[in-house]
Image (tube, rainbow, N blue to C red):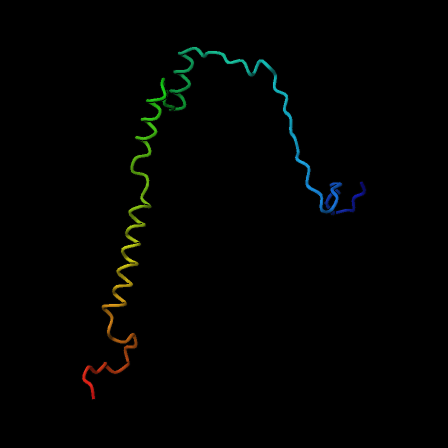
Length: 113
């Protein structure tokens, strides 16, 4: 297909047609898929260098995850505080404010003429 200088390449799509999905294939050597054990001393050295935690079972991993996440969320108390402030503002406006917002306006007279 011909291309002008500075223009986008022509994709060969027909107007109104559905785009065809692209498929990408990667060939990985079979020996990379073979799982092998690691020497315990090498694994200990690597985890020591990286400062990583090692877990031997799923329960200890779940317990560590819950322990590390405890106390992180503060959005719920902030949301409750915002809700209380909004409700109190509405009540304050409806029930508590009697005087005018204009400081220079004469005070309201409560006696009828």
